[in-house]
Image 1 (tube, helix red, strand yellow):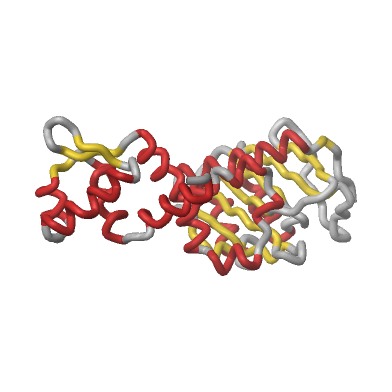
Image 2 (tube, rainbow, N blue to C red):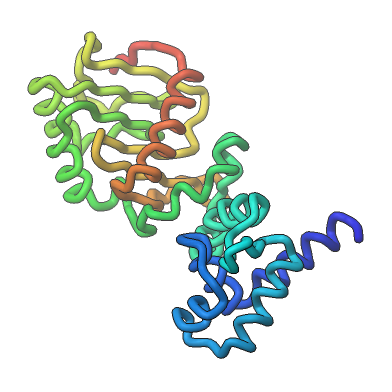
Length: 252
C-alpha cells in the first residue's frame, strides 16, 4: 500500500463516531472490553468489532491484563486531530480568510486556536476592546494596519499606571490629523513592518487574532479568548512579527 493508501485507510477508521469515542475513552485511561462496552452503551460484540479494527490500524493495543491503551502511533494521531477539527468547525471562516499569510510553523500549530471563540471583532466593537485594555495589568501589545484612535485614551491611562505598550504598524502609515501618539519610552515601544496583514490585540489575559480575507483586506473578524494555549499561540505569533519589525518613530 502506498502512502496515500495508508492515509485513506487511517482516515476511514477515524471516520466512525463509535471508534472515535472508543479512542477518546481509552486515551483518558486504560479500559477492558466490558468497561468500554458499558461506558459507551454498546454491545460487547459491537465493541469488540471496533477494538479489532482499531488494533489492526495500530492505533491501540491490548495489554497483558486485558486492558486496551493507545499505541504511541495512536497518541500521535490523536494529538494531530484538534487542528483538523478546528478548521473543520470554522470552515466558513477559512473559506473566506487567508491563513497562509502567517508563517508555516504556526499553521502546524493551528489546533492551539481551538479554544478561541470565533466572532471576535477587534476594531468594530470598541467597547469590548476597551474593556479588554482597561483590565490590562502588565502589557498591551498591538499589531494593526491602522492606529486604534478610539482606544488611545484607555491605552494612555494604562501606560501611566505602569503597563507596557508595544505597537507594530505599517511603515507608511500616517497618523490622522491632530492625533498625538504616546511618546516612545521604556514602556512605550513602536516598530514598523513593510506590510501588516494580521491584526493582534492582546494583554497578559486575553488575545484577539484577525486574518485578512481572500482579497487581502482586514475585516477585523477573527478569534479571541483567554485560554492559555490560544493565548500562547497569539503571543508567539506577535513575538515573531516583533522580531521581524524594525524600530522607527512614527511622527504626525
